[in-house]
Length: 345
Image (cartoon, rainbow, N blue to C red):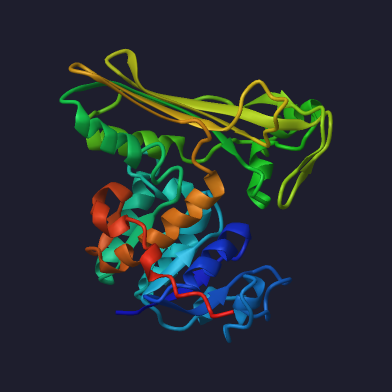
């Protein structure tokens, strides 16, 4: 069965998702919207580098055609994205968004979570927030690893992730700023670091049956000031400017830290004392589970993969506001077999 999709938001991540979905055989994009005047009126396939698709980008999501699913890639802030999500749900679109705060907002934004759940159920559709992190790497994956121990005492995750393929979202990390500019931007609230720590910790705790005492999100801090030019897909970091930052959060229970998360976001090169990589430690009473990726899970590609693989699972899921933990593993597994065969040379 072929599901129809509309795209809302065509920044670097939205376009990359569109590029993947345009090549799938089990879905068909029928519309796309973005408020950026630079892309309104353009052909979606051309923007995605695949050639003309016959899909013209419009500026107003309310004018999109009927479809099974709306894929939303606009902002990380749930307070802002909710005004986009609710009208889509009321038009009976199933909705999948990479808004980090949408992944599990039952503790952080309980009123918005209830509102989205009620609107989705009233219209017989589903809404899910997903992505690499949160969505998989700091919630669903460690939760799955805990299956291997009978009683979990502590979960520790350390990520060092390459951000060189991202565009507009880099500003919230302060990457590319001088240390003085970073301090000023942080003081005025422009540098906030990673959205989604509260949601990842909340989802992980809920899956383990833990009622946490509190979730503490630290302040993002500079980790590497570059002495070389570092070039990304959309941003160049000059010498003397911040090339990596660290951000951490923890969940406490009974006066001790039981969920301990930390991420270094950066443009890494060979001269750095650290490199991209990911480490997981599940401390159980019967055994300790450790998983390491010496090169790390590439953040941008993982986000795109998570979103496009989950797309059809959202359409087929029960109505309401669901998290990744509510979706069957087999339904969110890789859908690479559904890619169209390459055209003959």
